[in-house]
Image 1 (cartoon, rainbow, N blue to C red):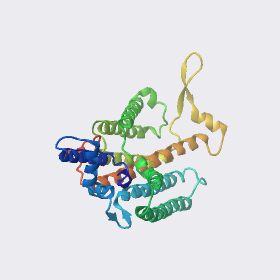
Image 2: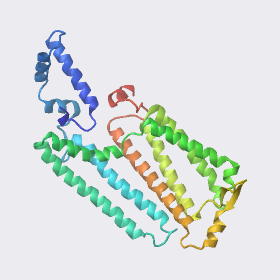
Image 3: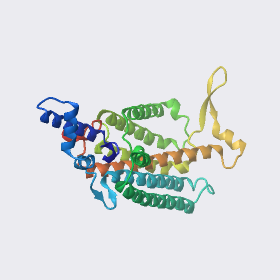
Image 4: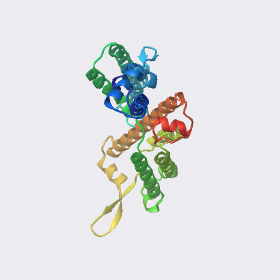
Length: 325
């Protein structure tokens, strides 16, 4: 039966088992034996027809069996999402570190990733058509593991991840508010500190919502807004350069301030190691924020197609969630 069900279909398996038990009880007038169970299986039909009835696995979306449509779409989104994330990150940091990359190389990289995703989708489609006609369980298991890469990359945020995000954002926001921390920033960067505090506080609000209600269209929309906000802010601060003028050092007796910018100016290295670290930090922030926004939009689109609302308990199984709407 599992061979004909979509990826991640434990809910369907439970439903089918329940149906078979009820059918066996009906045949045996309340009693259930191994023979009655086999008879119930014979009555409900072939495994493929039952899977089609419960999960719609016999349907197709274009050339794809419907059960593979979402995994293939997820795999394609992963390719395109990585390409967009890398491209946007390179576009923002390239003017700060000329010669590291170029607009042409970034565009070429993005185009290559998109083409790779299209070729992958075509190969997957052809392979699925073959497997749909004649396949072994081993072939299905191996192939669906490959398809599962896309689903895994777009998996739901766990309660543990939500808590870590909440705690991390709140701690950073509190630290940025402290005068002993704010004094470390350069005068040019200091006006942007309240903006960073605001984004961190916003992230500390989004985290508990995921923890309390799980993944739904409302929490995902907040994720997208947060991701876009970080991209905009990163584009504003990347040209400012290294944000810290001082750092605390302990000389054995007291804790004092060390002027790291003046020290690095005396070293006279080109490009500055501090600038390289700053550009790498901005690139990671932009790439991760871009992926957050893209994956959030993709998930919202899927949930809307499934007829979901805006606010439901995303921690529950799909069937339970639908009944709570």
